[in-house]
Length: 109
Image 1 (spheres, rainbow, N blue to C red):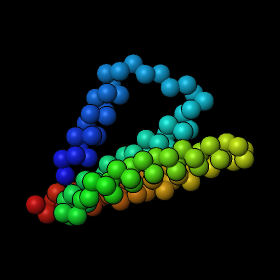
Image 2 (tube, one colour):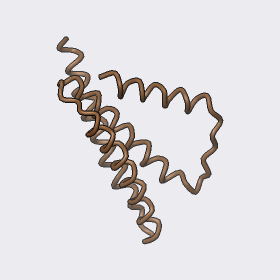
Image 3 (spheres, rainbow, N blue to C red):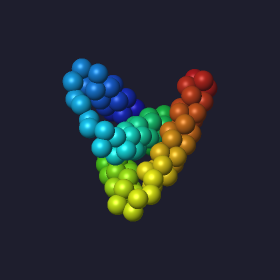
Image 4 (cartoon, rainbow, N blue to C red):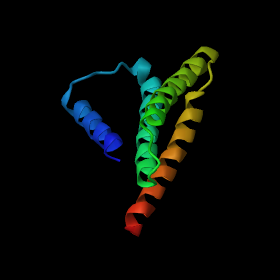
């Protein structure tokens, strides 16, 4: 349970403390990558609370979701279609679903 939470906290702290400027051209890619990464982190927290967390599944899911989301945004740019919105919608829904399940687990305790 602690690995995804520690990763999330470290990532937020690094993002707040390091002055990294992302060009506007990459904003679509970063938005879907961040949503995909957050989806994986909250999915890892959920799996940990359900006591079926697997580190290999978490790491492969984290990177494959992030790369797939960025790839969808890239393909959409090449086609002239706002395809990244599909990834934003899917990862946004999954993020809120995982958060709701985590909240239920915490309230049951």
